[in-house]
Image 1: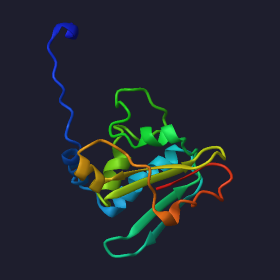
Image 2 (image 1 turned 120 degrees about the vertical axis):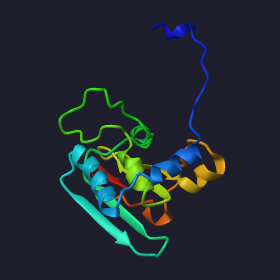
Image 3 (image 1 turned 135 degrees about the vertical axis):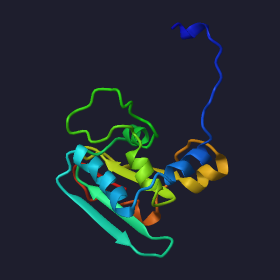
Length: 164
């Protein structure tokens, strides 16, 4: 079919509604953490560290690995919903399929997802999905923000690492 001759209309989903829908996919805490650890395995991590800081409704779970790490642009791509086409060829070690695992797993458990990463000893970078910001703006935008206590969390890493 020749689509070039057909009328078109944009049908971009509302960011706030879609992200809240991602939260309802049905992850338990255990399956959400397992899905994120799958990403560490795909990144060839030899070690994965999970930490929980209990603060009631403001509790924090961090998952840190020593995998390949990501550049600033790679973090943004990894945080883009549907970043990978499920029809594309993938390596046998790539456990992802739809480009939604990191986001849906995280959103099911929290309202802020910060990804900090450092690649090959370069300077660390970070980006955050804030569901409250998306609710206010209804835009598909990451913010350049990380919790103050984690801004230097990768400074002592010589090679590569990722912290969520």
